[in-house]
Length: 275
Image (tube, rainbow, N blue to C red):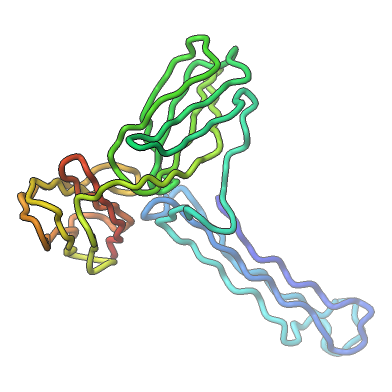
């Protein structure tokens, strides 16, 4: 269960002889869920706190009454949570003692990734993971513990934009640990300019517009919030302004990523399938 109840307001003191106080209840918080709908096995308690009352031991004539104090407002249970890429706070994993450092930097044709270990005695292997939304990660490299303490790989994907990288340590006792997350922005020559989606949110269909740099075969893919491809189509387009109509009424409500790919270059845009 997820509980974010507001606190109960305080009662007026038993020593009060007039009708002043008590305290109002606290407002509840918010429960965010990654998926499009809440699991039936999850109970989200978002009840506001109840108000206090005049103490039952008070000598005031309003004994036991709320005297104008009100309960706190209920909170919200919201689905389709996507972690912010930037902001005043950021959830990050605790450091793992076996890892000395994990680094990532953008180079001319790749993202260079590397790490150095302090201890490898209990390490079975490593996974380098990448994300575009800091929520859903895919493994781009898997390495076994070969006795070395220093490792380096290159991410040669031509996709431009901001990516989030982390290192997953797999231990011999089946537990795992994660490095801190590193955000890298990679500029890449685009196959399309001015990619846009409308309407957004959408119910039945979306219009995808862009400026194509040249005539080519273009792949259009749609991925759900878990990174699974749920739609695929190929178009032969001409250079210049393009406008594609894509049906989305077959998709369940939620957050999706649309990706256009041509000549190994990709552009992506997020949209929402509304109820």
